[in-house]
Length: 305
Image (cartoon, rainbow, N blue to C red; front, side):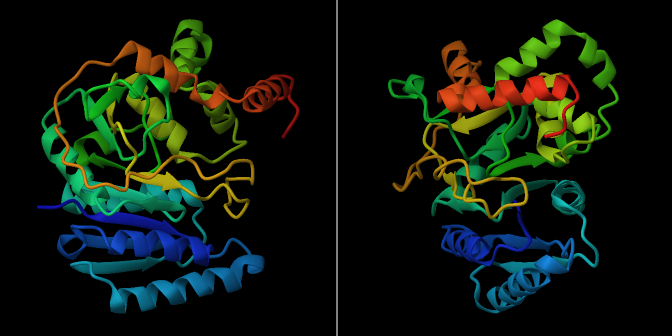
């Protein structure tokens, strides 16, 4: 049985259209259940945009190729973190696994084929916590001869997991105080991707509202690996200033895999060269590194940013 797809939408009509239309032409769309969670407006400034998105998903339901489409419209604004945590929990309890997409992701036509293949292959492997459809544009992959690789860093741009992994997440992060005092553990967490420690500190200080950093921390804390493809089956096109949590600071993130590919899944160890390059990926541009360092310093001295 194929995993259901969960899409989270809010107030970006054009982004939502592109995301859903790309999913609709996936090879397995006709055999897949689709759930669309539409958050409500945070304030009246977004009411018109939210209503436009809701009107579109109603129309999409009538025309789409999916096996079934369930639309859940929030009566009140939940915010991205609460929407995803509650939405994934609701669906995954019913289906035991799920594929999650947000409204600024463009998927390849083989996205669902890759995700379902990986979810099926690694379901019984207790060392695997999640599947990512996104991958990093790093030099180590240019000569790499496998279809997939593993790291201990989770991903949130087109991903999937299983009920038994998801339901063990401690969203309150009760181990944070111990983690905060443990220099080695903090260093190890930041090695997964530069900036993760700062994000978790910001989350626990109530300055951001991120489900993703808590999910990534859970995988790290429990020594669970994430499976990545060597070529992306998804790209993020939301860094245009239109998102609630994304400022206009980047170009389209990633290069989409356009050729049909048959994946050979296998159980591998973490490649240290790949893991190191993934960990440094966010510092590949000097300006990114400087912004993150400045943000850390300001946070430490108590200046709200």
